[in-house]
Image (cartoon, rainbow, N blue to C red; front, side, top):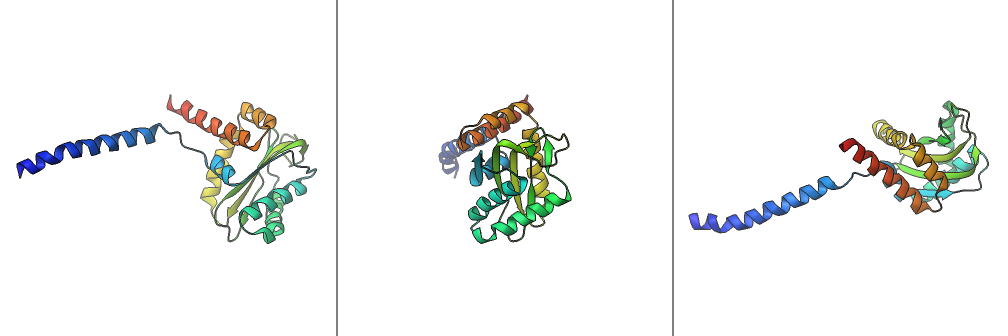
Amino acid sequence: MRHGVLLLLPGIAVLVAVLVAVFVRARRRRPSSPVVEMLRAGEILLDPPCLTRDELIATLTAVLAVRAGRPDDAASFAALVREREALAGTGVGDGVAIPHGEVPGLGGPMLAFARLAAGVDFDAPDGERVRLVFLLLMPAREYDRQLEILSAMARLLIRPELRRGLLAARAPSEVVTLLDGAVRGAVRGQER
């Protein structure tokens, strides 16, 4: 019996070493933001020809409705977001707005981003016209998840250097890279 246990020890040692290596590697990875992941699955529009808040909401909800496999529901998605906008403008200041709405039957949160050449009025508290718009669609009654996503967006968009980068982005992939870099920078800053 003792020989059998001794024969297993090298195999167990290798298994432990592999598990430790996997654990260490996983801890080194920087967590991604829900914002980055949703944009990878969502839509990024640079300089769409929208001149009003309603046009922009219609454009962004239309592309998300297609992504959700519900293109015929684009108008109802837009109406839900406009309904939320009527309660209070979603301009947060510094040229940023985060319009959002709850969509019954939506499979999960969806996000679209638009960078506008000319600003649009979103009733921002600073009175500034908005050029950076993140439109969020949420399944009904997922309040905690919605707050988590909106908080993650606020933590990212408070940074002037990120906003400047988004305004200068030349391609959708650059938008994702900028946001991902901001998330990774925030994590590195917290580790110190």
